[in-house]
Image (cartoon, rainbow, N blue to C red):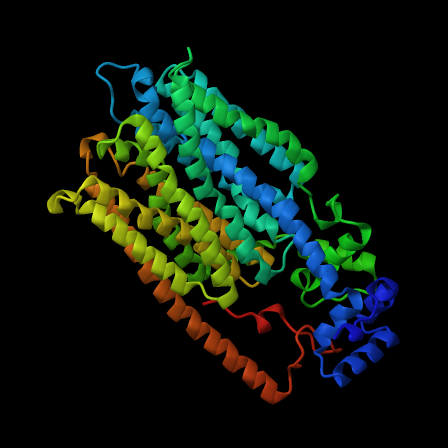
Length: 534
């Protein structure tokens, strides 16, 4: 089909005029395209850019943008979750400033982070207000400095205050999946979001391995091992914040690694993602329309509050977050209660999360290829529930320590996969950018309340088996599987109704067949082609 492509560079002005219905050349091109049996939408795209050009742009964003924000998220998760490793490296004993010692100080150190994290979720809207390179650099610098300053804490109240500041710095970064929608088409977002989110289990496994090395070295240094841990793991974020200033683009047009032609292709390929009923007559007006359409619309954002779909995924996110936020920070302690020494616990905490990282990427890729979310979510939610159930039954069944450790694997792999797929599912099932923004914000506000429960699931008084916490997480993950099945049933019914409505419009002759084709008096609404992903 290569011979059917028209050189985009030489005909871009002509074809852009044709999109407004005013160019005779474009009309003739459409006729030729229909004569060859191609859809009008396909011919229209070929006139603007070739598939090879589009693939080149997408690959550059994958390498330069997605991998970099994944690195930032890895540093973010590393700085928030390494407190669990610091605890068993001597932090708990050094920071107990009251007598008798309070066993809930550690829980407050965890909870304080999530209180500010939830309270400042509104900062994710600043992606539309502050230039991205400025915003990201400021966020990364703030959490890097705060994470490093935890090394000088002299009491738990001081650590709690620093954790509050850390939560504020990381809260604004939760909007990255929404930011990626500025660069990718709707059907391209899921796997890119998965790459970003999968940095969390990689960070956790990396944190455990690095903690083992730092603690081993710290035993020979004058600095307490836990203080050295905070300092060494927090400082890289400060350095990367400087790199982010010149690496993070504000939009496709400001990506320095794209050529002039590639910047134009990056804009043109998203033209149907940013405007649905308005066409332009020039490249400049197309950019203007896209800019206006990309602004958030208050009415559409508020409309998600009445949408059951927008509430079920936050409920699933809330339940999964109970496990997602608790096991990484409590696992080192849980492993020491299984009979392992501090250094062994640091090392054994890494493999489950490294496996989770690999499985997350595989599952997300498979889920995208199959265009299916329910099956993988149910499978991983049930496997996670089973892992937690085995841990909860350890005492009555008298299970050995090695079997309890093996049960950690399905538990951890399961909830990391569910978190990734639920976020992608939430974005997939909103038909416009404004509704995506509203749905994502709602999911974050509701879902991030899960850690408020999760960080209190493993009090010291429940050691060594932590039965109540394990049963709570097992029940939560089982409920997630049930909610996923209910959501699939609901979405399938809505898709059937949309199919029936489209069929009726086709029979009435009120709708054109070709996706994206605009005829005078027959404008196709965005929602007409939208279908919920199951």
